[in-house]
Structure formats: structure tokens, C-alpha cells
Length: 541
Image (cartoon, rainbow, N blue to C red):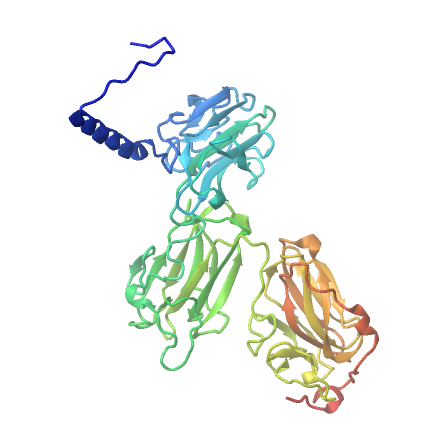
């Protein structure tokens, strides 16, 4: 019976027994409410596996209907969507194609876990009219937005990963928007993940810090829990130089004659597309290696063995620029098919979630005491060029950083050649700074080159002949995000080059370079082919 009057009826007193029962019931109801009202951490029908739009609310328009949920593997003039499961949302599945417009929303979810949200997206590349947006349920504010930039107009589904951890604990929803009606005026969607306990951009147990092979799948006899160790050296030498406490030492509790494979969990490549890990053991590209594979077809994309030390238990870093595969599902496979001496492989510290543009390269200041990681051509630069001398032959301080530096004049001036750095991604402010000395000669310089086409992007010379170091810079601000390498060039039979302390990730706040300091030389170099400049030898303090 509805009470239509605004007057409130006078309450009647309850007996003590009735009051106790009422309070107990009320308490039970209050206790039950949080569980009953809790918002789930996942959305309804995240992969459209119902075969329709169950769980999704069409807000307006005709772009999204049950008919746009498809089980097609290809689109007629090409293949393949690469969806998750059987069904996915294909915006152009109906006869209307690109013409219809509309909006639809997911169910509300509470962001939990790592705060990472990801989904597969395809279709047109149009951030203003074709996109998936993250909204806060309390005020409908848009927090994030993504369109299909990976392929720039393609039916293929590729992964978008958002770090929404700033909104942990908030009630959110996704809105899919299509306000485009011209060519490529549709959007594809699948596999929406709103709750993760591990980043989708990282493999499980990347550094073996569980102390075993959790997250990895082994075949054969080469790899087992017994190969995961916390040892810091191998008995007849060391250290390994691993990351964290544990690492995979292929020869631990075993021998070189065992073979097998070890496969990681899958991950979705995002960020800059850079992948890195540590490797040791035998140098055998055909039988001992780490390979990167595409999950959709198993294709091998990249491979690396331990070339840095050419048979050594010690770890050296490997970095791959896999930017061409951003958005793809990938995995690692470690292979040991070798049975002879050095027939084992060591690995550690897989990192697939690099979201920082740019990186340093290893041995940029020659602190390995060698040319490790660098590639020499000609005779001007060799292991003998890496010096720990603190003073020039004239007795002046070199001004080097750290213990070692590259003294090109150590073998005389008549030798020529080049020394090429490992490749790296330009980041920070785009400026590269280094310490430079040697001969003022147009054929003696340091250049930055594009890995993509070999084009020289910037060059710096010595300026004023001097053995001591002075800071110089290369401006690559227009090339941030590009993969480059440095080439140290000594093309002069009467000159040489000294280099140290190369820095590639500056933030633009470092003090400017005092170029005026180059106007007054503090030393000169002779034209000698042996014994260093002026036939003298450098000094240690």
C-alpha cells in the first residue's frame, strides 16, 4: 500500500524481544550489503564470446549491433584478425560497412590488481572519431583514449596497454566510439582485460627470482629447477654478474651433453619495443641461443647467442629493437642443442616492458677495460687503445672519467680506422655528450648515424688539438625515439682521437658546454707512428 500523504504515521513501540530480532536482521542486512553491492574487477563479456553484445550497452547509433560480433578469421580481401577466442567485434561486419556511427559502453568495473588495462584494437586510425575511451563512473570524465595507431588503418587486431594505476579503486567503464562514416570509418575490438596481477607486457618470472622455473615450460633434459641458482661464481672464476639473487646457469648440477628447450609465457610488446636480457655460456648461434617468437604463428623473429665473451660463464647484455612488433603477442624460447664443450647457456633478467624512450649503451665509457660491445675496423682502434693512464705524455691530467678511456694516440698517429658503438635509441633531450681529445683534423671526428639507412645525423670534431679531454655535444633532438649508433672515425695518417664518458640520456638540465674553452690549446699532438705522441708514454698518477 502506497502512502500518498506527506504526514508521517506515529511509530509504535517494539517489545524488547522484537527489537532484538529487528536489530539482528538489520545487522545482517548491513553486513551483506558490501558483498552484494561490490563492483567486479572485470567487465561483462570482455571478448564477445557470447556471440553478441551481451553486457555492453549501446548508447546511440547503429554502428554496434549483435551483427557486428563476428567469428570471421579474415575479412575477405586479407587475413587474419588474430582475435582472442572465437568471436570479436568487427565494426565493418554488416552491410553498412563504414557508414553507421554510434557509441557503446561496457559494464562498470572497479580497477584492481596492477592497474593495467589492455585490449585488442583494429580498424581506422582516427583519434577524434574512432577510439576506445576510459571513463570514471562517478562523473563520466574521460581519462584515457586510444585508436588503432599500430597499423594505421588495418583490420588486424593489435594490443593497447594502459597504465591506469592512478585510478586504482575507482569505478570505471569503457566507451567505444565510432563517429566516422568515410573510408576506414569503423573500429574492431576484442579481449578487454581490466584486471591483471602481472603486467601483460612482461613475462612471468623474468629473472627466475622464484628460485625455480615457475612460468616457464621445459622440454628435454637441459633445463630444470636444478639449473636455477643463487651462486655468484662458478668455482674456477667469477662473478657471473647476474641481476637479483637467482639466475639460470645451464651447467649447474648438470653437464654440457644435455639438450632441451625452455619457453616463456607470452607477453604483449609495448613501450618503445626494446627487449633486453643477460646471456652467458657457449657461443653457438645454431645450437645455443635465445629466440624471440610470434605467438600467432610461432615464427622466429630474432636470435642471439653469447658472442660478447665468446664462451664464458659471465653475463653480457643483449638488446633487441623489436619496434616492428609492437602490439604483437610474443614469447621467448631458450634452446640448447649443443652436446660438446661449452654446450650450455646462461640467461637472466628478461625485460620486455621498456616504456622509456631512449637508453644508454653498455661500455660507453670503456670501463670494461676493453672494446667490449664496440666494432673496430682498420688499425686505429684496438684493445691496446683502451688506457688507464691518468696523465698525458706531457704530464697533464687527461681529465678522463672513471678508470679507463680510449686513447687513440697510444699506438701513434699513422694508423687509421673506425670504431662503431652498439646501437641505441635516442632519448631524453636528444643531446649526446662526450669527452673528446686528439687532433684537429677534418678526418678525425665522432658521428651519429641512423641504423635504419646509415645516414649521418650529426658530427663533432676535436676543435683544437689537445691530448686532454673537453666536453662536446651532438644535437639529435630531431631524432628522439630513433635507433642510432656512434662511429668514431680516424681517417687521418697524421692524427688520432681520444674519447671517454659518452652520455646519451640527458634531460636538458645539464649546464651548457663551454665552447669558448676550445679557443686556447693546452697541448699539441705530433705526427708519429709509434710510442704515442712525441714518442712519449702516458703516466699514471
